[in-house]
Length: 616
Image (cartoon, rainbow, N blue to C red; front, top):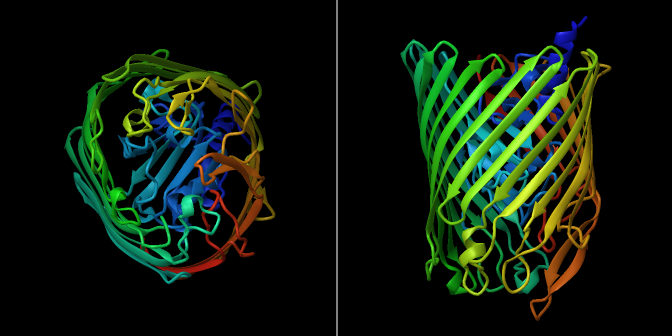
């Protein structure tokens, strides 16, 4: 039986981790009220003190995603949808609660990662094998992270070292002549820990486009992808609880794509993040951390139908941060000072402006007492291009019975225009204003027992000065309106860990026209079970029709519709010896032909088999 406090804690933990769409271990973990999340408050916060709408994807879930991209893996979670211009390695976007792709902030071990030219996160070259866990926070977090976090934040944590010696290896073969190999070692002794991981994957692919692609871009060839990556992490205890940590992720890939029938177009992708931090206790109850990090995102078109398209787009971001977490009678107090430097380059004619700096200070407070839980934060940014911006957030939760919790939250955000939107020749508009958002959210969570959880979240987000990328030049519109609700269930029924999510979304501009590529209705179901050394599971994802646009011969927009579709994935695992397992995954069982972007193909039925070795 639960006490009042433990029931509220477990309810919060289930709310934090969300639906275990990929594997039952997520459900088991959700029962642990000691679960710690970082992204939602920029502090290590216990799940039972958390009010933000957060999901954690753990390593075992990631291992079961053979053949899926990072964007596809994310889209299986509540409130998220994605689009992709083909398969592995092709440009993809993730929408959190219907917000634009540029309204999502992507972090890798706390470092901003993405393209400041397009203004979007770069998911396409981050290898799943390097990831230990992922935290998804829905709702605006500009009050902690500044620009771009209007829809939410996705943080990728790379694999870390631990005490002892822990090797791992895997081999995967699959459809489209897919092959992958990876190996790594986690180690630690005394004051040292470390981890190194290397991986390579490749596939022949399929044609990224079909004959509906705009501008005559269709080329009926196979568009493959190959990628090699390495990640490393090292930690050293200096004195007391003071530690020095260093992290590296480097990934290089080549993706084939379609830009017309006369060339086998291809681009080289390069991703790199480097981070160094030192932190520890200054006084009892006062923890301080100093961080410096750099990320580089490159997209180099090496072959194309149009020679003017050749060349390297690159974003380099350098980040300095000094934060303090101080225990107070009202809760944990966060004090933050941060500086971000962004530099960009494009082929041929450079941008009119090629860099900007953002200096910021922020404060946050997270606490609870009895049935009451609260979170608040405020941030001031000084942007070298757009001047001063102030953002804030406030959330409150009340456990009015041991089984029920109600919550409410308010938050503001802003998104700075990208360099393409500002300065692209013939399209950019240097007079663009930042987008500014205001979000309201209500939630209700029910924990009738330790076997079942139910959560309802409703939200309303208004984005003023919404930037319209269509037409002859980028321009600010009046606003975008993002209203919706998510109903999520997770539990155990007859030995099965099951989950279900229904999302209702109305994403539209001020005229009521739906924003492109967002489904109003989506349903995601999952079931997993262990049978001794065997495991089995299934995931079903269904999406309603979506609006999109294409272009006629005069380059005018033409509205089109993307048909509704449903996808069923099956998976099985056999642990045939200590430390050894074989996994099989059958994606898109019915071989459904569908599009997430008009004129771009998505994978049909695919089979992947993985042999994995990971002795304990």
